Amino acid sequence: MDVRSIDLSSTTGTTGLHGASAITKLLAFACVLAAVVVQQNLFVVLACALLLIATVIGFRLPWRAIFALAAYPGLFALVFAFAAAPDPITGALFVTRAVAAALAAVILVFVTPYPQIFAPLQSVLPEVVGDALLMTYRSLFLLADKFERLRRAVRLRSGLSHGHPLRAAKATAGAMGSLVLYAFDLSQREYDLMRLRGYQGRMRTTLPPARSRTFDAALLAGAGAVLIIATVFRVSGAALTPYSWLLPAAAGTAVLLTIAWRLIRS
Amino acid sequence: MSHIHIPDGVLPVWLVALGWVAALALVWLASRRARRSDIRRKVPLLGVVAALVLVAMSTEVVPIAYHVNLTVVAGVLLGPWLGAIAAFIVVVMLALLGHGGVTVIGLNTLMIATEMALGWALFRGLVRLMGRRRAGPAAVAATILTLALTTTALVGLVALAGGGAAGARETGALDPASLSFANPFSGGIVSVNTLRGAETTAAPGLSVARFAAVVYTLGPIGWLIEALVTAAVLGYVARVRPGLVFDGASGAPARRPAGDEGAH
Image 1 (cartoon, each protein chain N blue to C red):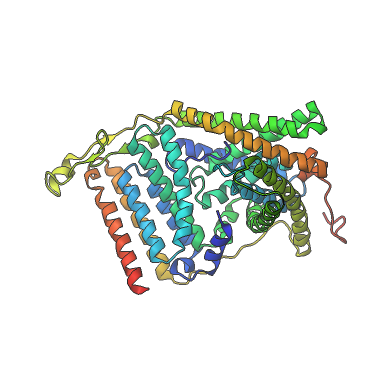
Image 2: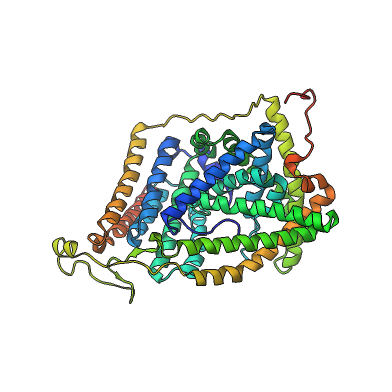
């Protein structure tokens, strides 16, 4: 997972989704997640996933990175489905649910900087937890950079060859040992800096206002509609089930139309 | 096994809700305990150790798709209470990256917090038994025991969930026996099939035995890798800065910036 590319996209992106209020995006995410999780119909979950794919393409988000990240839990879901699912349809449902939920989460982080996601959490969590979330976000980049440099140094000195997994493991473990010491020193330096800047045990994060209230309302309405449709299909049980394939068909058409629109515009 | 690689919507709602309630209670209790000492010093330490675990989780040690977790290392450095907070932070960050599921954040937190606390307790006990010079073997034993116990807890979790509501699925126009599609409009577009409906199948539940067979087959390779890396890391740190390993980072004597003496 390349956290730096996510951060770059979320902070420098200029799409409508980037400009929407963080609260709206979190609510929309919650609606889509609820729609996916409560649903037992494979076709409805598939339709949600296709709509999310259309969103990625429509807003010109970095699709390669997003799809790669969303596919990762799909891989684990596939193993889980193989290990525990009683039949192929339930297995397919597990994998589709995992990919759709991950797509929703990954889209959220690609269009919303982490501090804006953490800000609403800070108000409900104990202060040490809220502040530590922000510190983790900050430290992650420093440690990831340091670890990359250490690995490069190790590779140059002893080699991280795929043909010598034991040597590679030993070298990586050595780099991690150095990283632990660096991390501890880093925490001391961070603390010193925070004290000098007047840290008294609470970090404040302010949320920027939405760029367009109309867009926020439309986003929320769209996500709400997805939840309502999923709930209707869930509650109606068998009555609507024979027609559930219409949803992925419609969502698939939306994906194709979005791709065509993008190709024409570019 | 560290975090649960179980996707959203697989475990029944009651289990997920119970996990959230227990995890939030644990985090609240842990933050109350952390407040007894200098909370401001704990924040950067917590952030850095949580980031360390995230960096480790994103790195393949050997090119066979296994990643290490460093949860036992984090437990040894932070202790059980701060470890619980770090576990929650790690799981939230992972869920936002699509790695682990948002609804299972509570259960994942409990799982990683258990791993950190168990690793911390076993490592300390074994070091007391074997002596500080054998920190490496103590780390190997503590890690393998911890991972074996948490993997068993994971199997127990799936057994608890087996046959729950989340395992059910609707087949719609898809015949589950032959996996072939039937035309839902065969009896008319609106009236006939809407009134008659289609088959709704309650799945026979999760296969706990097959799941246990898979995790107990693949798991030990991961346990061994994690144990060796943990031993190497803790052994290295024990040689360079023994206080961090044997007293814990949160208990280590803190450095004060000039002019900041007595400001706490």
